[in-house]
Length: 395
Image 1: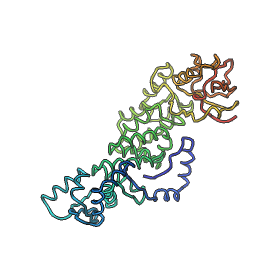
Image 2: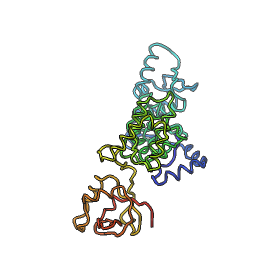
Image 3: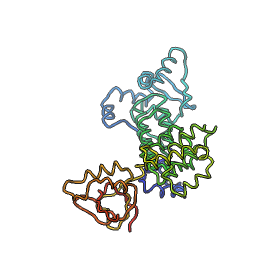
Image 4: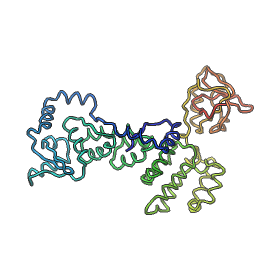
């Protein structure tokens, strides 16, 4: 799993361009750095105070009283049968069977020597060092196979710290495969926040590794942040085209049902007429338009609130600045009703303010006592709190 720093939403396109230009040197330096995994501070302190574990670890390093041999990729490891049985249910079954039925080393074919060496060190000392972060994912697999909860938790946390928009989709697939809820949650949040960049990672290869259910969960979310709904449509088309064997019509329809076609631009809607895939699922597109036209309360009939990011403070606002009002009416109403009691009567919520949601205006006036702005709307003097505004560009 490639390690890259987590970027803010505004940096995604810049970072993606840098990656395409080939920032190989910095990536190599980052991935080659050694990584140390260990338990929590409290657990580590308890281990240091545990004289028995410390003594057994010292014996293991010296090869004293080791009573079991293990062979991994041709590399021999010596260990204490009792410790292995206590630490790993998987190894417990092997070492107890071997003691009764056979002599000689126990061969582990499912692991790499490097991963097992790190896992063995962790089982004895609750600490291990990896040569680079490329070894993290194999160690995570090893921890899952051996069923060593402290190692699994440490490896999962280390992987979660190092995922970003470029690798979050692969991390999501890994988390589902190994049933790692915390990693899945982190990966999905990043996928929702940086879907455009994530979908383009590895020329779309990372996106294609998702199951239909995983992709559906992402693109169905109101929290999905995309610059344009066409990003979602192109992702679905790309995913369907990459499936071998081809995805069924039912799967294609289920994914297309999450696309908010009414949010496409006029030019994009016209282009849909020439899309063979959409011609096969014309009813889905027509239903999405109908829902929007009649104001039905369905996910496809509303803009994605996740695409709106309020990253400013009141002091960032300037008269003349272009701002966009949050598209979610319920959120705007809630924020307007929170305006301080000392504000003017023009602050608060009015039903007619619904028309401003999702629209872009110029700031006409600022009101410090309510941290709000009056927008340049003819014959209207509403003041909206800065929390529902997004900077579009400076005048």
